Image (tube, rainbow, N blue to C red; front, side):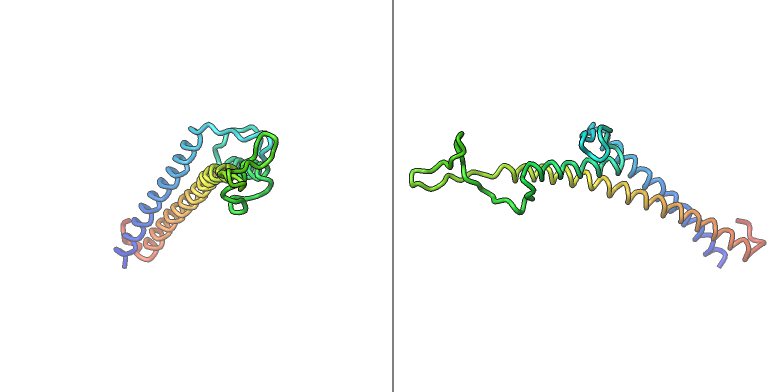
Length: 163
Protein backbone atom coordinates (compact mmCIF):
# COMPACT_ATOMS: atom_id res chain seq x y z
CA UNK A 1 0.00 0.00 0.00
CA UNK A 2 2.79 2.43 0.83
CA UNK A 3 4.45 1.88 -2.59
CA UNK A 4 1.10 2.44 -4.30
CA UNK A 5 0.59 5.71 -2.40
CA UNK A 6 4.12 6.86 -3.15
CA UNK A 7 3.77 6.12 -6.88
CA UNK A 8 0.33 7.79 -6.93
CA UNK A 9 1.68 10.91 -5.24
CA UNK A 10 4.67 11.19 -7.56
CA UNK A 11 2.48 10.53 -10.61
CA UNK A 12 -0.05 13.17 -9.58
CA UNK A 13 2.65 15.78 -8.98
CA UNK A 14 4.47 15.05 -12.26
CA UNK A 15 1.26 14.96 -14.30
CA UNK A 16 0.05 18.11 -12.57
CA UNK A 17 3.28 19.90 -13.44
CA UNK A 18 2.93 18.79 -17.08
CA UNK A 19 -0.65 20.12 -17.15
CA UNK A 20 0.38 23.46 -15.64
CA UNK A 21 3.18 23.86 -18.19
CA UNK A 22 0.88 22.82 -21.06
CA UNK A 23 -1.85 25.23 -19.95
CA UNK A 24 0.58 28.12 -19.62
CA UNK A 25 2.02 27.27 -23.03
CA UNK A 26 -1.52 27.31 -24.52
CA UNK A 27 -2.21 30.75 -23.08
CA UNK A 28 1.16 32.07 -24.22
CA UNK A 29 0.82 30.55 -27.72
CA UNK A 30 -2.63 32.07 -28.18
CA UNK A 31 -1.57 35.47 -26.87
CA UNK A 32 1.47 35.56 -29.14
CA UNK A 33 -0.45 34.55 -32.25
CA UNK A 34 -3.29 36.99 -31.60
CA UNK A 35 -0.85 39.82 -30.86
CA UNK A 36 1.11 39.33 -34.09
CA UNK A 37 -2.05 40.09 -36.09
CA UNK A 38 -1.97 43.64 -34.67
CA UNK A 39 -5.76 43.87 -34.36
CA UNK A 40 -7.14 46.93 -32.59
CA UNK A 41 -10.76 47.12 -31.52
CA UNK A 42 -12.88 49.63 -33.41
CA UNK A 43 -14.10 52.81 -31.78
CA UNK A 44 -17.67 51.48 -31.68
CA UNK A 45 -16.79 48.22 -29.92
CA UNK A 46 -17.55 47.57 -26.25
CA UNK A 47 -13.82 48.02 -25.51
CA UNK A 48 -12.81 50.74 -27.99
CA UNK A 49 -9.37 51.40 -29.45
CA UNK A 50 -7.27 48.79 -27.64
CA UNK A 51 -5.07 46.00 -29.00
CA UNK A 52 -6.83 42.65 -29.16
CA UNK A 53 -4.95 40.27 -26.88
CA UNK A 54 -7.12 38.52 -24.30
CA UNK A 55 -10.58 36.99 -24.10
CA UNK A 56 -12.43 40.24 -23.41
CA UNK A 57 -10.95 42.15 -26.35
CA UNK A 58 -11.36 39.08 -28.58
CA UNK A 59 -15.07 38.99 -27.70
CA UNK A 60 -15.45 42.74 -28.23
CA UNK A 61 -13.91 42.49 -31.70
CA UNK A 62 -15.99 39.44 -32.70
CA UNK A 63 -19.18 41.19 -31.58
CA UNK A 64 -18.43 44.39 -33.48
CA UNK A 65 -17.59 42.48 -36.67
CA UNK A 66 -20.98 40.75 -36.49
CA UNK A 67 -22.69 44.07 -35.81
CA UNK A 68 -21.03 45.70 -38.82
CA UNK A 69 -21.95 42.85 -41.14
CA UNK A 70 -25.56 42.85 -39.97
CA UNK A 71 -25.68 46.61 -40.54
CA UNK A 72 -24.27 46.17 -44.05
CA UNK A 73 -26.71 43.40 -44.99
CA UNK A 74 -29.83 44.99 -43.51
CA UNK A 75 -29.88 42.61 -40.51
CA UNK A 76 -29.85 39.53 -42.74
CA UNK A 77 -27.57 36.61 -42.02
CA UNK A 78 -25.87 34.47 -44.65
CA UNK A 79 -28.70 31.92 -44.65
CA UNK A 80 -31.36 34.61 -45.09
CA UNK A 81 -29.90 36.01 -48.31
CA UNK A 82 -30.32 34.56 -51.80
CA UNK A 83 -27.29 33.22 -53.63
CA UNK A 84 -27.97 35.42 -56.61
CA UNK A 85 -29.62 38.81 -57.02
CA UNK A 86 -30.76 40.82 -60.01
CA UNK A 87 -28.12 42.93 -61.68
CA UNK A 88 -29.01 46.62 -61.69
CA UNK A 89 -27.70 49.49 -63.80
CA UNK A 90 -26.44 52.87 -62.58
CA UNK A 91 -30.03 54.10 -62.26
CA UNK A 92 -31.06 51.17 -60.09
CA UNK A 93 -33.11 49.46 -62.80
CA UNK A 94 -32.88 45.72 -63.48
CA UNK A 95 -30.63 44.70 -66.35
CA UNK A 96 -32.44 42.35 -68.70
CA UNK A 97 -31.00 39.73 -71.06
CA UNK A 98 -31.97 39.27 -74.73
CA UNK A 99 -35.06 37.32 -73.70
CA UNK A 100 -36.26 40.02 -71.30
CA UNK A 101 -35.37 38.06 -68.18
CA UNK A 102 -33.43 39.71 -65.35
CA UNK A 103 -29.67 39.09 -65.38
CA UNK A 104 -28.68 37.38 -62.15
CA UNK A 105 -25.31 37.94 -60.42
CA UNK A 106 -23.69 36.58 -57.28
CA UNK A 107 -24.83 38.21 -54.06
CA UNK A 108 -21.64 39.85 -52.76
CA UNK A 109 -23.23 40.45 -49.37
CA UNK A 110 -23.07 36.68 -48.83
CA UNK A 111 -19.35 36.79 -49.59
CA UNK A 112 -18.99 39.43 -46.89
CA UNK A 113 -20.67 37.03 -44.45
CA UNK A 114 -18.16 34.28 -45.33
CA UNK A 115 -15.27 36.60 -44.49
CA UNK A 116 -16.95 37.83 -41.31
CA UNK A 117 -17.77 34.30 -40.20
CA UNK A 118 -14.16 33.27 -40.69
CA UNK A 119 -12.90 36.17 -38.59
CA UNK A 120 -15.54 35.75 -35.88
CA UNK A 121 -14.83 32.01 -35.67
CA UNK A 122 -11.09 32.59 -35.31
CA UNK A 123 -11.64 35.16 -32.57
CA UNK A 124 -14.11 32.92 -30.72
CA UNK A 125 -11.78 29.93 -31.03
CA UNK A 126 -9.00 31.97 -29.42
CA UNK A 127 -11.37 32.72 -26.51
CA UNK A 128 -12.06 28.99 -26.18
CA UNK A 129 -8.31 28.22 -26.13
CA UNK A 130 -7.74 30.78 -23.36
CA UNK A 131 -10.54 29.27 -21.25
CA UNK A 132 -9.51 25.67 -21.93
CA UNK A 133 -5.86 26.42 -21.15
CA UNK A 134 -6.92 28.09 -17.91
CA UNK A 135 -8.84 24.96 -16.92
CA UNK A 136 -5.79 22.82 -17.75
CA UNK A 137 -3.65 24.99 -15.44
CA UNK A 138 -6.23 24.75 -12.64
CA UNK A 139 -6.52 20.97 -13.10
CA UNK A 140 -2.72 20.68 -13.00
CA UNK A 141 -2.55 22.65 -9.76
CA UNK A 142 -5.24 20.40 -8.27
CA UNK A 143 -3.23 17.32 -9.26
CA UNK A 144 -0.09 18.74 -7.64
CA UNK A 145 -2.08 19.50 -4.49
CA UNK A 146 -3.58 15.99 -4.51
CA UNK A 147 -0.08 14.53 -4.88
CA UNK A 148 1.13 16.37 -1.81
CA UNK A 149 -1.98 15.30 0.13
CA UNK A 150 -1.26 11.68 -0.81
CA UNK A 151 2.34 12.12 0.42
CA UNK A 152 1.08 13.47 3.75
CA UNK A 153 -1.48 10.68 4.13
CA UNK A 154 1.19 8.11 3.30
CA UNK A 155 3.52 9.59 5.90
CA UNK A 156 0.77 9.52 8.57
CA UNK A 157 -0.17 5.94 7.71
CA UNK A 158 3.45 4.78 7.58
CA UNK A 159 5.46 7.02 9.96
CA UNK A 160 8.65 5.00 9.57
CA UNK A 161 8.45 5.37 5.81
CA UNK A 162 10.95 7.85 4.41
CA UNK A 163 9.35 9.70 1.52
